[in-house]
Every structure is written in structure tokens, then in C-alpha cells.
Length: 190
Image (cartoon, rainbow, N blue to C red; front, top):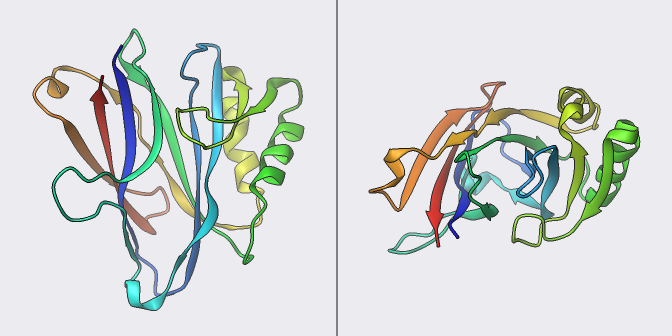
């Protein structure tokens, strides 16, 4: 069975501030249940960006065969389409309790939220299962988290013929706020 992989390659922040405490919220299709979606928060600890980085974070090391920051690995859907919304956040606190954020999301969504599960995307990232019909509420709930919103990117992909001759395809876009540019890659492996 083929698996799809989503990796972050690079983040550039277009703000004068030089110190950032970054984390990511991923809202995506559920890898196996068509009527559900997943909300996941990663990494486990905040990513500290200091002035020497010049507001740039490169995940993929130089050299052949290197990987970026793995966001998800999931079985290829039958329709060869996978929906991911990626939110870039800056924590206003030195430590952030992501378990509490997921619990607050679960409480806010009520009956449309199910369980927090671990290893959602063949990674160690925990995620909250939600009903697909609750998706319109998620953005508003995320906005209520008392952290700086650096924007959202739609990473939706249809795995068409362009993937037949390519091992990996890079994508690039600015976040919805224009405050950051993100490069990510989709790939298919066995």
C-alpha cells in the first residue's frame, strides 16, 4: 500500500522581530475515517528562533536523501486527495501545554469532538478526532488561543500524474497573514 508524506522544508518569517517560539496546528483529513478529521499540535516543545537565524528555519539538512520535519504519513486515500490546513503560531509563553489546548478544543467542539489519540499519522504526534461537520468552527476556536497568529496555509493536494515521475514535490506559499513563507513537500512511498 502506498503512503503519502507531508514534510516541512523551510519557514521564513517576514517580521522585524527576531525571537520566536513557534509551534504548528495541523487540521487534516482523518487517515482512515472519511467522516472525521484530525487536529494535531506539533512539535512537543516550542521551536526557539533566535536573532542569528535571521527569521529563517530550515528543516531539511543539506545532502542527498535528507528529510524535512515530518508532519504526517498516512495511507493514500482511494480518491488520491488529502486535505491539510496548517496554522503557524508564536507562543507568548515560554512553555505551552499542548495537551491543554487539545482538551480546550475538545470542550469547545462538544459532541463533535471525540478522543485524543496518539500516533495519528504514523508519527508520535497526538491528535484530536473531530467530526468533519465541525470544521467551520475550528478556525474560530484556534483564533481564541492567546498566542500570535502568523497565518494559515492550505496544503491540500491531489496526487495526480505529476507524482508518477517525481519522488517528492515541493510547494511554497505565504501564510494568510503574509507574515511568513512556508515551503513544504508531498511525497509518495511504499
